[in-house]
Length: 150
Image (spheres, rainbow, N blue to C red):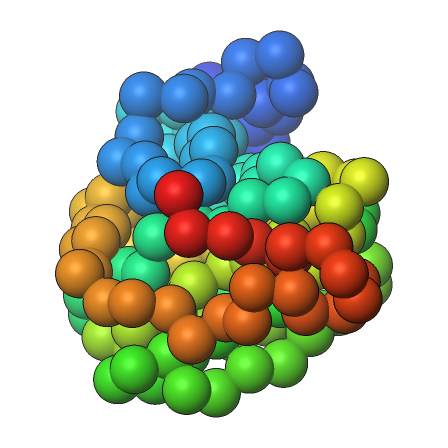
């Protein structure tokens, strides 16, 4: 085995690939893919949601997704009408099963929320959905709009 070519691969933060399917309100960047690292079953990368922003509702088809929150607070909404909600903080893991409609919401007006994302497949499946979010206009900050419709 040629471990120099088929061993450990390091993908540096300045080498992440932004040429991956996107959802409004979020930036995804690929790190571990077949092309970049030779991975055959996994995809890994990062996601960032800017302050006072939310993603469009979407799902990832048959893929299982795990997020590890690195920075900020992420409010997840999920369900057929995004009727369920819970927050995750740095150090928390989030599991999103296949085909589950969901939305990531930055739960802070000041800080970008960032997470590491891992999926169990190489296909860049992102199905953006035409759902209206039930997210209140002023959640967590009385008198200030939280995520107004844009």
